[in-house]
Structure formats: structure tokens, C-alpha cells
Amino acid sequence: MTPEGEIKRAIFMLLQKRKIFCWNNQSVGVFDPVRRCYRKNNGIGSMNGVADILGILPNGRFLAIEVKSKKGVVSPVQKDFLRAINELGGLAFVARSVVD
Image (cartoon, rainbow, N blue to C red; front, side, top):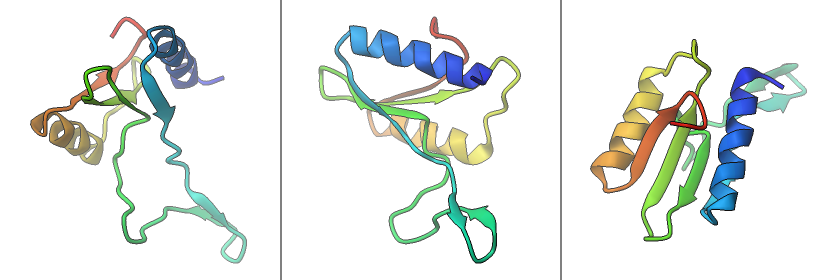
């Protein structure tokens, strides 16, 4: 498991223990057998930069957690997504450990 995968697993375990409704955002591209490569879905309603973990806190607030390793870099579109969620009243942040 990757360092980010281990952090994500620990965060999910903590959120589930606290009975916070959450899910994993599958942001991996879709394999195109014709082109023989992975492609992003850029169709209607798709969005780049969506956080790894999404959820709803007990008070109804939207939760978004971008999981990164200690050396992981948050991209500009990921920063924009987190900023938008916070500006709209949600709780969004980068987690580099379960403590975050």
C-alpha cells in the first residue's frame, strides 16, 4: 500500500469510528482499450481536483479531505476545490496524517 493509501485507510477508520458518513472519491482515470491508456472523464458534471475523501458531518456540513504523503504536492486545482468548499461553509483540508 502507498504512503497515501495508509494515511487514507487510517483516516477512514477514524471517521467510521466517529460515525461520520464518508466515502472514497474514485478519481482514477478510465482505461480506454482503443487508445490503450487511461483517460480522465471530462464529460458533463465531471470536475478535476475533487478531494480523496468526501463526507457529511453530523451537523450536516460537507467534508472534503485531500490526502497527501509528507512529500505529496497539492495541485492548484485541488487547492481551488478545497478553498471553494470552505468558502461555501464546508470543512475542507489537506491531511498528511491521521492526526491532521
